Length: 103
Image (cartoon, rainbow, N blue to C red; front, side, top):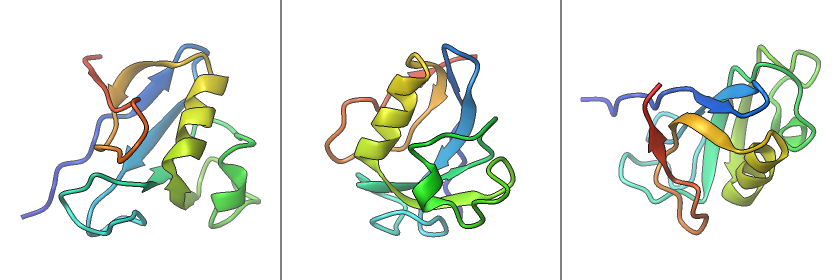
């Protein structure tokens, strides 16, 4: 049985991305329990300077996966886009941005 995917994160400025963590994602720990210190980001709506170093294929920023993104970098990304207005995040180890909002 697989853990269900989190809803897409949407930020105040319109930026969006998928943020996942599980035994089948590029996350740490790589399990279905967490809390997680690193997560997998996918399908960002556009290029993000904070995520770019983690891109599997940096030449296609909206079509690649971003593995093992530290939660602090995720926080910087979300903050730089005005904050999270909807979506879901995995349970994070240190950062207090783990929130769920209905769309």
